[in-house]
Amino acid sequence: MADQSGDKKSQYKKLGARHKARRRAVDLLFEAEARDVDPADLIDERVQLSTGDESVAPVNPYTRTLVEGVADDLDRVDGTIESYLQEWTLSRLPAVDRAILRVAVWELFHANDVPPVVAVDEAVELAKELSTDDSPSFINGVLGQVVQVAPQVRAAAAATRSTGPTERS
Image (cartoon, rainbow, N blue to C red):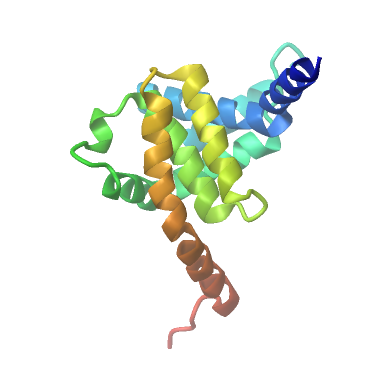
């Protein structure tokens, strides 16, 4: 019986609102890449579709935060991912793995309310659900390296925010 409650707890975690938001963000990032459209434009389109039409699922605010965040910081996120790929390039990865890694790296760098272990665990869970058998361990390995630099990236971002933009004469 103890095993059943553990299984229910695990299922509950997987079905939590943040997990669903991450999964939808991965879906939207995947779709944006496949359609060659800006992810921020795609999320705006989905928000507008769901406004006033009860047949369209509303967009979770965290999904929007993730998609817009990744879109705004895509160069740094992709550069970080690529720097930890060994004998691979970002373009060679399955598109779903790129989307999962982008969400997780953005969370590691910017989501101060998400512990690093949660961002990595969620990415591994999404890879188990959506990608190949090899993807969860691959994603875990890449993110295990990114976790080591994430505190410095967060600190640098916080320092930039606290000093604000500099005035130019």
